[in-house]
Image (cartoon, rainbow, N blue to C red):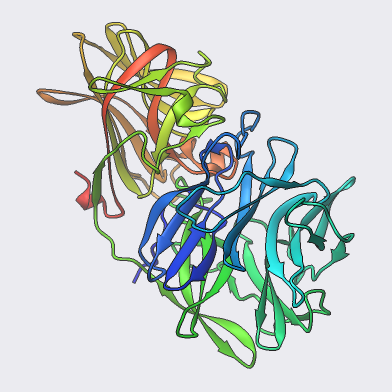
Length: 491
């Protein structure tokens, strides 16, 4: 069976905890608000988004976040009757964000900051005397300082100790993403190394205390797809979890690249899961946990938990009006980090985004983007609608048509790429922009999907489809997302 993500689309850096019969998982959100998507599951296979941890402005400021800046690599844990979450905000100068809640579906506390914990990918663990230990990939004056650990006061955020160095992995670049676990008589240190691209891997060591000394697993890496023929690549950044029956599983992220070499991924890093077997005191990767496939079609509520905006909360841009939502413009430059955009993640290899809009009071429409400078727009202005490609600093009109006024139905589809292995025409997919009317769809233009991919744009995110406004305001009557991993099932 072809592996499928348990949480598809741009959901990287998963961290998971079980409390009772429920599993709770969180992910990086980078420049998007609300921050840290929160998911719940009963079986580690089927997941439902139930909100965000950083759900209000007092908890999250990403107003200065560049593309792929902001919130990175959270860890969620449960201790002494409370849920705890730590993450890094690279956009506001405050480094770590520690928040907690008795009920993860309720309000999480305003953050406690840790100004002396300077680095990324923080982990939470409590030693035998109840001291909170934060392990992380440290930064120093000269750059990365490797994996380090400090004791921290969770009430004030003050560091109680200086840094102590931890195991640095098996030699892969960028050791990061540490997680500590107490299993039996050992402490285990799980890390990511090799970089988050094709060399990504998960390795593990154990020791008698949270400080080590560390004995590497003789079977490292625990997980990697480097050099492996698989539709899933870049596997890494993992977290272990124990079920109530004593069995174990692991969550991790990976990408699904397509097209000609070097191949291109467009959905971002997605979350996968697998069984874990223990033998001779070491974990071994087992069968992957794969949810059922099939097509989905959803009429979206722009206030729903799946929706986000870069650098600001969607509520800063959207107001309810009779018959829909009004989206107000911000920066008039469609390539600006501050453009007014709200959207939801593309979660399938083949997708359709359709919006019914009225732009009589402004300029804007539908867009599919991976960052501020790489997107396909369907732009309504006055009596014209046009498909426009934004690729870095270049903005090119691909085609346009006349309008008769009133509400307009806009559509972007992603179609399978075509071509020969050695042909530069073989893309991960093809993006097609359309105007939909009573007589059917009129194609306005199409764009090679490579130009809205991570390999071209760079960064750490994936595609989002949504609505945008450059001037004035746009009224959004409705928004539909449909997706499938089988192109024959796309409506």
